[in-house]
Image (cartoon, helix red, strand yellow):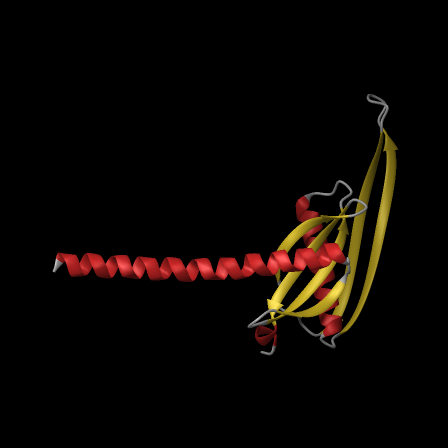
Length: 157
């Protein structure tokens, strides 16, 4: 009786472990493919990408890496991605973007310090569910490349 129980428990553990590894391997393979595709020919915008079994909606945005906090860059990337995806799916959007650069000089260290403020105002008709961040890579010219994705079947709700 104990052997059967132990054997059943081992089989269930191995099965759960195998399924959990499958998802991560698919995501890692998709990430590697899209990063190679981006590095071969950089782009920004929305694309539908297919692998062997699934179609994905991919949104690629570039955000300047100019000393902002990671939280601020993530939020800017999320807003840009939602705007691009809404436009791609046919939603009407009006947006305004404003960058304010303040240059000040510290007397103590005699260094010029730039303070950059991004103000994003957005009005939209339509709704895009939040897309998952697939990866963030370094792009050229001190920019970060954010890749957001979602399965196309999940978007049809």
